[in-house]
Amino acid sequence: MFSAYLDIIRIRFLMMLAYRVNYYSGIIIYALNIGAYYFLWKAIYGTKELLGGMTVTQMTTYVAISWMARAFYFNNLDREIANEIKDGSVAIQFIRPYNYIVVKMMQGLGEGLFRFFLFSVPGMVIVSFLFPVQLPSDPLTWLIFLAMLFFSFLINTQINIITGLFAFFLENNEGMMRMKRVTVDLFSGLVVPMSFFPGWAQELMNLLPFPAITYLPGSVFTGKVAGSAVYNVFAIQIVWFVLLIVPLYVLWRSARTRLFVQGG
Image (cartoon, rainbow, N blue to C red):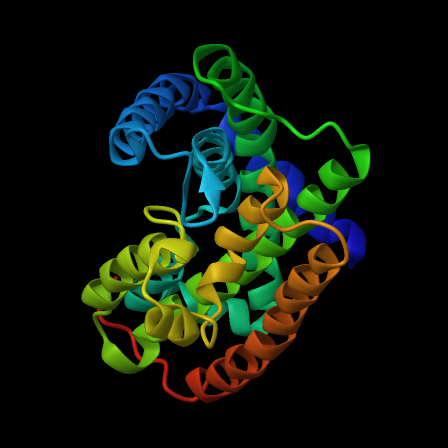
């Protein structure tokens, strides 16, 4: 069964190769996006050396690595699942000898690996030449960041699958998917780092899994979080991954008894 899941990763990776031109152009789009944020934050900083616990260089690095990390952990599994529920094709998944949720995660991983090697890595190299990005010099920081990036993918994918499974109960969860995307981008720290929010908002966000997707890995990469605190934030990611398994399992078990076909 493990080899079958590896094949699913390979197949999705190869499928993405058919649309690789879109991702090559996406590198340019992301670079322009990062450039816009760079000049925006540079204007916000003005003559100040430090804001939100970050220097201008740290902020530039944070913006660059956060957007390139998003290319890896981002996927549309919620929409795929919702469409399969609507047309009834998900029904055949119930009788196949594999776990539907694990299959979706493997498909997302195949897509993520494609984005990582053909989008994030070359994109980060290009951005490093265009903007004053300060990359970590400690190999251990790179290893921990890559491990945290993988958990960012897992947590974001869990949230996507949970959102997609709500189509079993809502019939049309388009609004919920759009709200989820905006919520993740905002509260994960992608648009604005969490340290720039008011204290009460930070306390509220600490109760949610979203900062574990972008803000925590970005803080480690930029050096805002260092020393033993790195392992503490890594542990937070692991905890959220474990906690999200519970609603995912409960929702999937409940959803299996509510399938009805809306079309097809």
